[in-house]
Length: 366
Image (cartoon, rainbow, N blue to C red; front, top):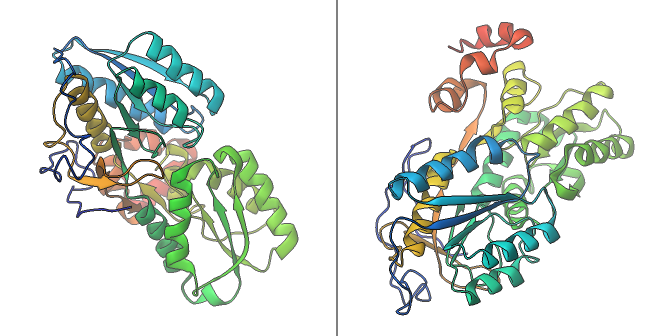
């Protein structure tokens, strides 16, 4: 993957990016085809999200994208939404349906980056550009926006090392990576290993099917049984949902060790408040969602992406894809006020319900 420097303030609620490289460098994907008709604001945007178990998709991504698309089109665009509920075959059918219904552009967060390639090709052949959202789908995609996923993994690994301190060499950690069908999971893993390798001993490592908390819970129970509860000093968890399943298993075994996470889910933030979870990765969704909307509207209207995308990435099937990569923040007890509360992701009242109030008061959340 090639990247140019990214300069977007984390937590910013808008994206303002300089011009990207030449159209030739990006395979002419930043330019509309000469045959593409210029469209007005009355466009139809297909939005396909991968699952509804992770809170972010329905709570943040969908409404943020819809709002920005409406804003960019004087409230004339239609957003057609479908959620694949972690079913790659269903998502392929959803793409086919949107092609049949002649949407003008697709924003696609793939369940399975490889399995979706054929459907992306069908959309392309039908003259429908595709913006890969959050996960780098394979096939002839036209644009991509996500976070710097290797940096996400490094951020998690570095935070775990910080939490472990001199205990890092005194035991073993368990690594709970994400789904093997998600290309982001491989990048998170790469970044985490870059931070952790040589500094800790990895006792057990798992790729967790479908990112499901119950699968992470079962994996963690297996790791505890195999390693012994006194040997585990920390757990790398690739996201907050899995961290919840992991912590349940740790509690049942009477183990309290640092656990990482990602996505700043409300339950994850509340576990950070109480100290059950050490950190999460806060990914400001607004810049990512707004970038996807901007690129989708531009492509649907036959416009250049030069004013939106300043980066390029290579997928296994497509080189030089115009991209927006958004930086991330390590979320701990120390900066809850300055991140998710300040940015309006959650209110103090949402975080500090009943059993969390005393811990919130201690941290000075307000």
